[in-house]
Image: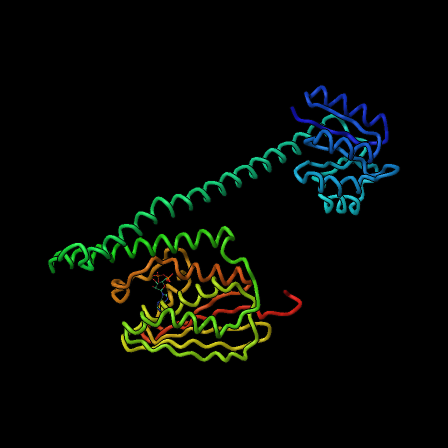
Length: 366
Ligand code: ADP
C-alpha cells in the first residue's frame, strides 16, 4: 500500500487531505511542522510527501532539500498558499515533483497524488532494470572470458605443441591445414579480446587512473610493440614527439591501447614498403597526436562510419586483411573517457591521418 505523508501546520489541511487519501486506500501519516515531518520521513520512508512551503520553524524548502538527502526517490509535492512562479521554480530546483496551490479540491489532490506515484513507480522500475542489465552484462563478461576464452587459449597451446613437432612429425599437408586452423583461432581470440575490452571500457572499468603522462614515452612503447608487425610488411615507423612536450592527463594502459590500435591499422591498411608517421604537438590546452600512413585510404562515404562498432570497409583491397571492426570504436571511447576526441582525414589511394586530441595535465586539474 502506498504511504503518503502530509506536512502542514494548518490542521484543517492535514485533516482534509487525510480524509481524501484514506478513502482512496492510501496509508496516510501527518505532521504539523517540518521537524516532525522529517522525523517521520526517516522512520516511515513514505512514497510521497505533501509539504507546505510556509511553516514556522523548519520551512518547506528546507524539508525538500533534506528529503533529497534521505531518499531521492521519494516524490515531493509542494502545497503553497502563495503560488508564485519564483517559489514554484525554486521548489522544483530543490527536487519537488509538482505543486498544489491552496485552496485545492479533492479531485486536484487525487490527480496530483496519482501522477506522482506513477512517476515514482516508473523511476523505481527503471532503476531495477538498470541494475538487472548491469548484472547481466557483468555475468556475460565473466561467462565469455571463462567459457570461451580459456578453452580457446588451451586449444591454441595444443596447436603450438603439435605444430612444433614436439609430439611427433607432422606431414606438410597436415601442417598447412593446422596452420590455417591456428590462424582462425587467433582471429577468434582477437575478437573476444576486443569485445571484452570494449565492454569493460563501456562499463567504466578500464579508463580509471588519470595521471600526468609523457606522451612520447607512450608512443615509443606502442611503436616497439608494433615493430614485428611492421617488419613483416616492410613498413617504416617514424616518430616526431619531443620528450619536452607538456604531459597529458591520462590512463597509461588505455592510452597505449589507442596508439597500438592506430599504428597497427596504419600498418595493416598500408602498401608493402609504405610508412607510418607518429607526430605529437601542443595546441592550447591540448596535445594532438597524429598517426598518418601512406596506405590505401578510406572513401569519403565510409568515413562517418569507421568509428562504429563492427564496421569494416568492404573492398577488394580490404577483403584479405583480418580484423574485428572494433579497434577504432575502442579508440574513440577511450579518447572520450579522457575528455578528448579523435578525427580522421583520408584520401583514397594516398593514405589516412588520425588525430587524437587529449587534454594537457594542469596542476589544478589533478
Ligand atoms: P579492424 O582494423 O579490426 O577492421 P577498426 O575498427 O580498427 O577495425 O577499423 C575499422 C575499419 O576502418 C577497418 O576495417 C578499415 O576498413 C578502416 N580503417 C581503419 N584504419 C584505417 C587506415 N589507417 N587506413 C585505411 N582504412 C582504415
